[in-house]
Length: 350
Image (cartoon, rainbow, N blue to C red):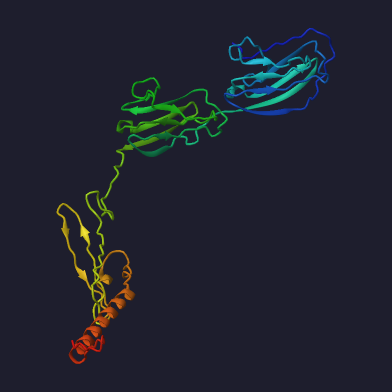
């Protein structure tokens, strides 16, 4: 059976189409994509009497007419002339590597030559084994991609080695349902597999298999590390503990002299725990030595001494002195003096 692809496109309208550019044109496309093979009349409104698209058959080395009835091209080729009868371009979709080759657009003896190169998908890590480690409960991405990310493989599959066979991974299986998905994004050549909610049973050997090769991955799933916490001494007390407090009290004396001590300040740190204790050491501040136990207290900075009403004390002392002087003089007068009362020339002696 002769191998040939035919596409016979005949237009029986007015003559007068001359191809716009008869030079050789090279086009590069990728598997799974589309390619537009350009062919135009010089006059966009001109219509050729007859034209054909042909492809070089590598088996018999002749140009053969392409036919849309062939199963290889059915539903994959179409003219894109739109409203311009002089546009004879051909669009080929869902490209395969076999679509690459030499094409000609022939119109009334004029020829337009086009070389189409279709790049396929070959794995980036062909026949190599990648080692990946993950943890239970997490996710892992098993990488697999075409060397050319714009190329899409005709077929590919993910498999896991279950001795002694490679079993295909299906999204509908109970083991992988809602846990696996392809991570291709917007790149048709990215075939990576994402596995979520990992278990230790997910560990093992995986293979990304393409027609042009494969990539192996060895996945190790370890138990998730546990968080270790350490108890550090707290700088703050619990709600049942009260911070030490300093209590000050002033006990002024009713009389003071230049040698007497200033009012004493009592510092009472109190700490309440399950058993409450109270210690009230009395610290006496002396004007002669200038030393104070406050320097040894682990509390707030020392507070200033309370204000002493020295004016009031001075007035009291003066009153006492006056009273003493008056009392002394009065006693002396009673002993030595006589008071005379002159009334009707009569003296009365007291």
